[in-house]
Image (cartoon, rainbow, N blue to C red; front, side, top):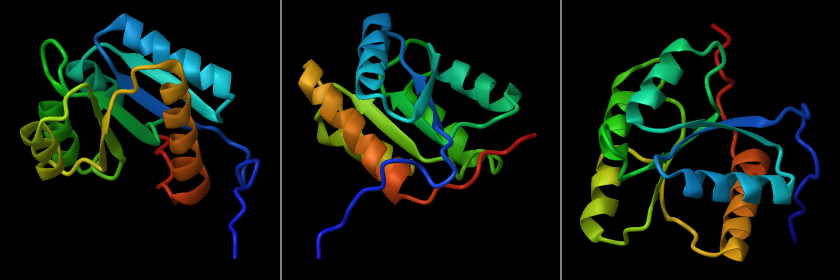
Amino acid sequence: MPMTVPQTLPNDEPIHVLYAEDQEADALFMEQAFLTARAKIVLHFVRDGQGVIDYLSNELRQPDLIFLDINMLGKGGPQTLEEIRAEPAFAHIPVIMLSGSALDRDIESCYLRHANAYVQKPLTFPEMLAFVQAIENFWIFQAVLPQGDAR
């Protein structure tokens, strides 16, 4: 029996995604894809791993999902992922690692640190749109996420 994907969220609330990316062009590329797809997602950008930790520690509303670039200046994605998983208040947040690398050692390193997924960065706009739609279809319409804390 074919499944149908609901067109709106049960509570019609967008999910909040924290995206750590030190390359402004990559961040704008992702943002444009989310805007084009009209996804029910609110993106919050930080430039590095320390920005992620600061955001998680200081924002009243935690993100529902985190995208981490693995190769950022300063604190990189894998180190940031370790810190997220070590902190009980943040450990439940799904983390998707993004990279241009397809090296087994990079992929394994992220999964050993308990990444929820490792995705090679889309290179073309159609690929980025497909990625955005896959994120929306799975993380909004299929997966059940913990509710963000209102601290």
